[in-house]
Length: 312
Length: 322
Image 1 (cartoon, helix red, strand yellow):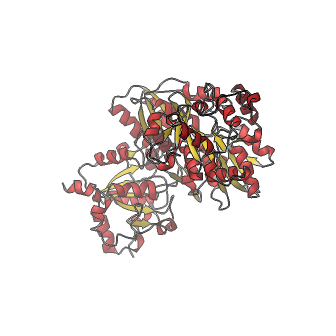
Image 2 (cartoon, helix red, strand yellow):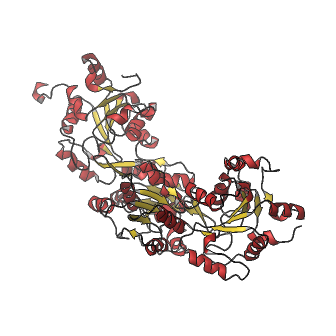
Image 3 (cartoon, chains in turn cyan, orange):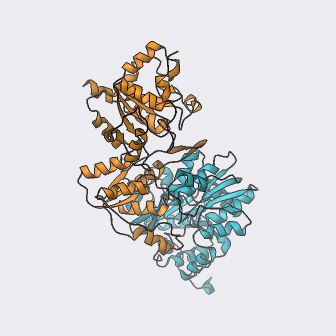
């Protein structure tokens, strides 16, 4: 394991180091966007790396902050990259939230700012959702008040990616959060979302932080790097030694931080939201991965030749 | 030099004031203390909503008399509002209904007007992306500025539509953010994208963190401005309260007056009192708007939002002393 201050590129490891590294983990938790594919393009041959990991006996779980895609869409996209997954291998904030709400036996209304796909997951699990306003607000405080003040017993405010997020929705959420029993739950935490080469847009984490600050309430984070997500992953996989997990991802503040906080080993790949330049500038030890690679495909060079099954 | 020292911070002059830890209740001042108070300033900066009149409504009883009293005592009044929903003309019209108060156009500092004046000062002639109310935008159009049009109220269903909303539309040379009742995340993202161009100006008007509303606060425009400032790593020129550019603008208004000879009257602890104290002004909080006595009591001693004086209303200024 790399314990020095700077992360090690996995291809600079000696043969012996490679062997020790491969034997040091049983589980792989992997991010999806920026690792297997980006919005516009696939990471070439990424699928081969996961297939090889699986052949080497590693158990794969995909942990994404993206709830905009349904599980079916993700499975189809995976098939295109020649990765076979079962739905229960994919974790995203909406699914994690269902586990979480059941674990605390949540009852009550949920006010939600999220994608239709995210809402569908909660609805299918039997939760009652409120949303809006979706109307144009006349330019008066009276009309604004009509749309944001509501007396229904909302006991959780949920914010994830919402293409139609408005200031009025955030104001309404803030008013629900005045109730001492109303939880603030966030999904994806990214403050900036890479949407193409060198192009970012403002991510849901930035909007969630408005509610955190206005309400003074710490959020319960369902996406990476949230602690409840990590605990549920460990529990569901019955993992007792977190060092036996390798977390692969492209984001410092999501994937690496998540892995570090839970005691996983961490591997940063440079195919998504972090450049080598940004990695080398990291000073916060919580954001510093153990290893890095140009792409997840570099793992192929560490793993045994992809040999036909008959060979053993 | 003396003025420079005074401007360094609120503490430099406050240390000379007795009992500066908790605010003085204006009504409890003796006649002599009241006279000393009135002698301690020459200029008054006064908020409007929640101080002179109830937000967007009628004059608060006693406030017209108090303003008249200040004018009678030779104090120079400037009204510093964060409200661009009402135009400067509408503010003047409201003052004109009160026979005893005389207010001229120059005495009103207004975010939309301040932004407009700033753009004129720098000879700006480009395209503007303006996230503000219709009256704010109209003021800019009336002054001859060009505003980028936007489809409002359409629901975004796909990534392609999101992309079009953020990256479509013409390039602009300035982004302006004030109160926009129909502010959306995509508008802020379009602003974020336009501001990647370093020559695109970044201006803001009212920047309150919270706006008093009913029995509590609602989220103000400040956090939305902050999001774009953080995502772009750029600091906007903020020409509304509690902006640094407004602070400089007010200083220029009365460049020869030491800050401790200025009294700032407001109803918001953060946007008025905090803003004024950071300028080294004396401060009077009135309880007719966004703050209550309980809010003041909950501040720790010496807090940056602690006012020097608290009054139930502006009218306290012309009541007889105890």
